Length: 189
Image (cartoon, rainbow, N blue to C red; front, side, top):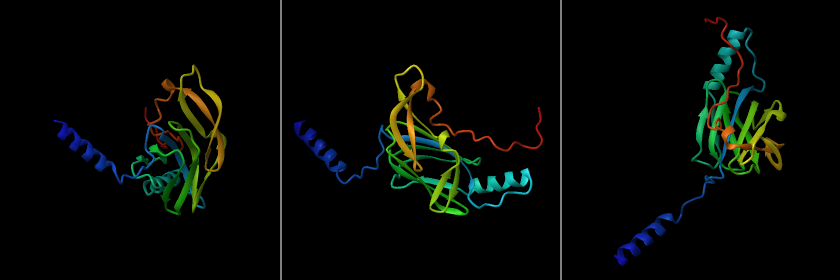
């Protein structure tokens, strides 16, 4: 019996060698938001044409996190995205027509946070956040109501204060956000 236990321990130890740490842990982030457009894109002449152009743009867009192969999530047809298990400091890459090398850098975000980044305009080698004051970093804590902390993180070069948030108010951290935008011309009730 002791011999079997020893062999089992040796096998477990041998299997663990050589594994690469990709930064996925309980300290990983959820990152949500939406892309508004690609810099320099020609807008459609009518709302219908513009809606079709953006739908095609978003259907052709992909998203990933560099050096983090186990991140889950994706990009929706309305431009919204959600990424789970993102390392605390990472580069999020986008591939869209006209912005094949777009990226957004996250630095020093506290582990376990939910990062919300609305209104991103993609461009070659980068991304612009139209209104950085709308970026939110929420960290679940045992507090009664959301409270700004002294902790900060950087999102796309913008320093953002972390908001300590009750866990009960963070049920949407795994959901695609709703960017709003165009509505159909004909609405039926």
